[in-house]
Length: 394
Image (cartoon, rainbow, N blue to C red; front, side):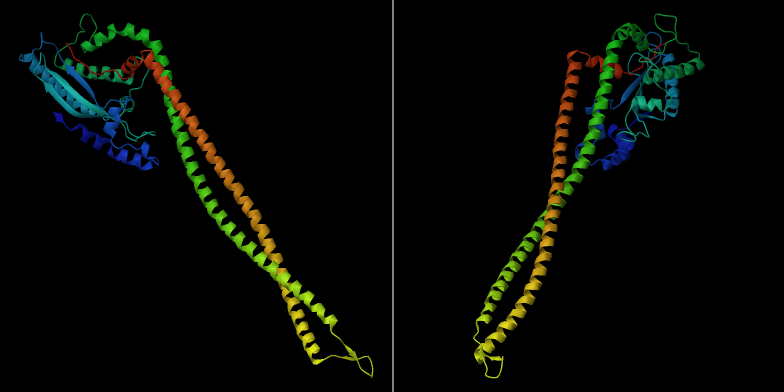
């Protein structure tokens, strides 16, 4: 009737959604390499589910009897409409077995929910898939899976009714579709007794899920902030190095100009020697004469004086400008250092948040250990993920 490779089915159903999901992940550890392996290693969903539909038993419908042919025909008709009625159920293996006490139909399927906002947009989820087919949880016992199987039972019952076959529940006067239902009723008291404990565990699991979601959001936010601040720190370090080099060059220029000013001052002192030149009065008035040697010395000193004063003035102005530039660079350098300190403070805050995250992870592990120590983990998993095998009986 149907036989497909499970890996091919997963690639066909979830391949595009998986590629889209991985493309959005900035962190490699959050990417999913193989969705089938991911589901098999997890505890939230099963890789696939199986339903078994059976009409009658070995006493009234043995495989070699004529009634078995009718039962086989009913199962084939039911399977055809089952596929049309369940758009979010991907059947990959379906076969009618005639090698046991009575004909029965095996249906192996993968449920898939579309348009999901968290995780893959199309993902494996029995409850979500059934909700998209109109089955929503009402109580802890009236789960979407139970409502769905009850609905499917009724569909099979209607096909049987058209063939003149009525169903009776074993041991009661109620209509039935499977021996499993009868066993479930016998276990109802036990389930009710465990309901209080299960509710507590549901709260714990809900808290765990919220905690994990919160942790993931914090990690993403901190990772983005860390990358941004780290880039800013690197930029500031480079800028500080450049400014320090500029400052060193400016300081060297100031030192050089200061030396030139000192040299000019020394030359000014040398000019005082002009006052020591011997002068001679003439016989005709107050004019004085000097020797040719003294005149040459005086002329040269005057020229040097003028040049030195001009150079000193220029160097003084340059020195003042360089000092202003030096002061500005010092202030800018201080501001940059303060920015670096602020960025590194953010890095320290990030490290503190990482330690806090590790603390939350330890608390989470203690919660799981607490559930295991109470011996409730298996019971909780069985209740949250009940076996949906359905046997049919007449």
